[in-house]
Amino acid sequence: MATNLKIELAHEKDIDELISIISPCFQNVPVEVLMFGEPTPENMKNVAAQHLKSWRIHAEESSLHCAIKCVYTDPESGKSEIAGCAEWFTFDRERTAEQYLPAPHLLSADWMENEDDKVKALKFNKPIVDKRNEWMAGHPHAVLRYMAVAPKWRRKGIATMCVQWGVDQCKELGIPAYLEASDEGVPVYEKLGFEKVDVVEAPWEGEIFAYPVMIWWPERMEKVPQSRLR
Image 1: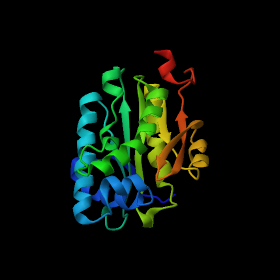
Image 2: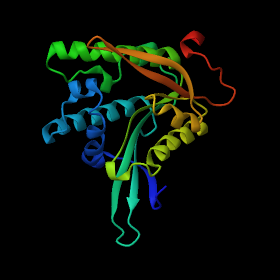
Image 3: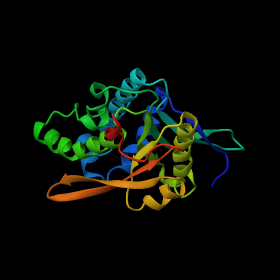
Image 4: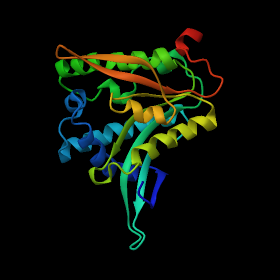
């Protein structure tokens, strides 16, 4: 792991730099390309606007900050740059069905103008939303929705730092941490204490994209879908 790296809270002034890292990292996810387009300057303005809106909505439901950045500071020049980032949407209090059942903003596709494309995106996103609601329901929890590392900073432990930050927060709060992983990511998350509990199957052009559902559980919490306990 590179030295002089530190996790800090990210703020609205950081959004353009964060999106310049996030957008290219998700070009291999068809629904992301459909919803946001290729990472052109104009498209990234829209991505930034939608992420900021999601932050603001979250601030209305939780007292906890949702965006973090991993900052590298050059020991000689003192100059800093963002090497990676993540969005941990942490709900520190119970929520009603009216609050948790609707798709979160970044999965709602509300900004899309082409209705056919919007229907396609929502069809893909619905199983993701439904599975989160099945496992977490209105129980306090944290969801890792986006995490990205700038190309030159990969394989230096930054993704692990971003995930560990969220797990540490969940430990303090005594709540579970939830994410959907890639198959390649499963071993990494397992090393950080996550357990594979389920799979999301999302349809796309006649294919099924499968994402392992992984949860980090606090001690003494029953490891079952929280919807069964409501």
